Length: 283
Ligand SMILES: NC(=O)c1ccc[n+]([C@@H]2O[C@H](COP(=O)([O-])OP(=O)(O)OC[C@H]3O[C@@H](n4cnc5c(N)ncnc54)[C@H](OP(=O)(O)O)[C@@H]3O)[C@@H](O)[C@H]2O)c1
Ligand SMILES: *[C@@H]1O[C@H](CO)[C@@H](O)[C@H](O)[C@H]1NC(C)=O
Ligand SMILES: *[C@@H]1O[C@H](CO)[C@@H](O)[C@H](O)[C@H]1NC(C)=O
Image (cartoon, rainbow, N blue to C red):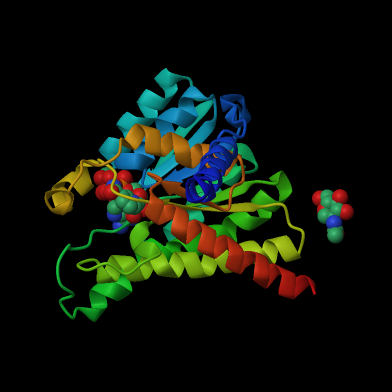
């Protein structure tokens, strides 16, 4: 009985705490009239984020390379109730495009409330093949363009007290085989944005940064490349997209989706390390 209590009570407490923690009140109205950029929104999770934002009545500016797909997503966004919807096409290998997208938001709306960084370049799922150029290119698309867009957008985000949402992966928290180039770019995002987040806190700048650590999600790309090695089907992209927007609107530090025991362990370990580093800074 004693042993049972010792295990059961903390466990139930943890579950309850988690339920309360995760039910902080999100209201779709929070996004109404907000000005949002979503990158990599021609398909997959990005496309679904654009639709959720449209239903919530936000202004959206979406980007990817394929003009025809973006055009369709914009049309659908307007049907769903977006306050406005625009797109810009081009490749994020080009830092000029990254900056131009932010300039376009300034031109369209005169400001920005939320920057959702979500696009990724094509990579292979296999043993590392020694191709250094591929890593350089992937770092440009998956990492450097995120930094370039953030630098361009920070003045507008400071003015609006806005948010940056960075879409990453479990492969950006732990090394797993067959994704070495991809994993490297996602770790880079964690390093850069977790460091920047702390600097913003120290400088009392009210721009939140939410790092989204995703597991297997059932998008077309994931179905094609990794679903054959996964034991379970991917989590739904629609729900994933909503969770990302929700945690950004609530200004959370990190989102884990889908949430597993694995995630809880990483999350708790990081939270305690973070408390310590902020205490050191304060002390
Ligand atoms: N699906 C999963 O299982 C999973 C798991 C963990 C993390 N994630 C993360 O979730 C995010 C979205 O993943 P997803 O599965 O939705 O991906 P996806 O369906 O493949 O979509 C990727 C998006 O990026 C765009 N894109 C590709 N190359 C580009 C380039 N060079 N320049 C600009 N845009 C480019 C694509 O459009 P174009 O081809 O038209 O350019 C598309 O809109 C990514 O950050 C990914 O790492 C996904
Ligand atoms: C946008 O798409 C159109 C049509 O595919 C293409 O002609 C144009 O070069 C693209 N723009 C950029 C910047 O890639
Ligand atoms: C931080 O900023 C808020 C307003 O944005 C202000 O009320 C508060 O006094 C500031 N705190 C510090 C320590 O500067």
